[in-house]
Length: 426
Image (tube, rainbow, N blue to C red; front, side, top):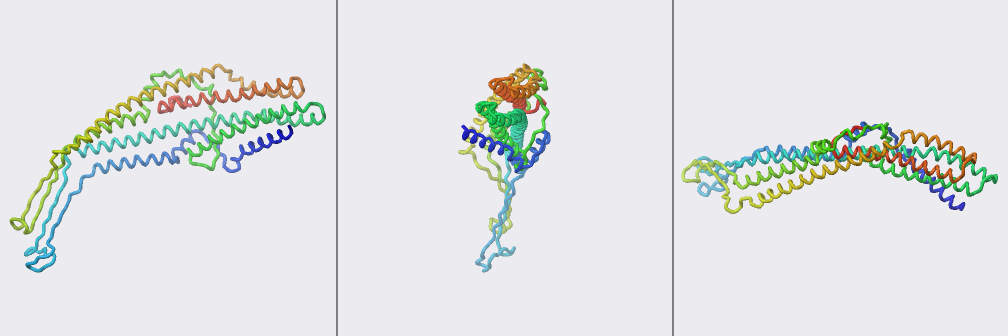
């Protein structure tokens, strides 16, 4: 029995030392959500990398607007056997010819390519802002998750401090033979259980902190979220009607806009592919010094592929199928958005309903009662069973109340995420 207790105490001490390791290795910074958002927006490497795609797409618009270069050819005499001259390009005896050609794009292909590139810019922006929406939701979720975990960890301090003091007193009483070893072991077991659970919460907090550090691009700082939000103080979600929230999501969800722009892109590509069936024209002018039917001959030329075999049939068909595919994806995305908003709205309603059934003063009353119960147990006015049952109830109450508030805040953040912008401000 003693060996088991020593092992448990060692494990708890190891766990507790691990929970405060970050204070030795990392700076501690209290941070508000606006400050966290500012740092996230300026430093997050995923956002910065995605933003480059917008610049790349804009450069492609610039390229689509550029005209084709003219082509210049020059021919000259290598050796004149009559004059026995190398590279004879003289006006009197030499020979040379020049040919200038320009490709003329027909059927509006150039304008269609420009429009396609401009739509691609919109799609790159849609991807960037949808990534921003997703990462911002993760930031908000982790911020509040870390805050409530820290509150839960702090809530363990009072009962752990009380039990630590009580354990020391019981050790003295047990040594004097006033109480039995069974009572001492039961109190110590309760203390170790609370410390172990506190350590488990700290490990959860460490995981959330690691994600926060990655989002804020700062692995050397332990962030302490500053928030005064209390779920019961928030207004009711019932002031927002579900159809209004769905319409707002239709207007603000960038993944939905991406699906719509993908449809536009494929429609524009279909128009371009049909235009590609029309051959382009090559116009040119030639000059020949003395190699033609007369000296100093000048010519003009027009060239065009004859569309007998290749009329771009395959690409036109593929582009037409891509339009049907994009329509299907857009319809599916609209249904997904509506479903996500409905689900998130229902979660907020459920957690809000549960919060309204709980007395806000219940937690404070429990804290006051904890001190009274501990004092009465020390005076042996209540039994060990009553004492341990109360501590177990206290622990469950703290965790459930904290989790319920966190669930409500997370549900609101999820609703804002599904809508595409903060509708419910925290």
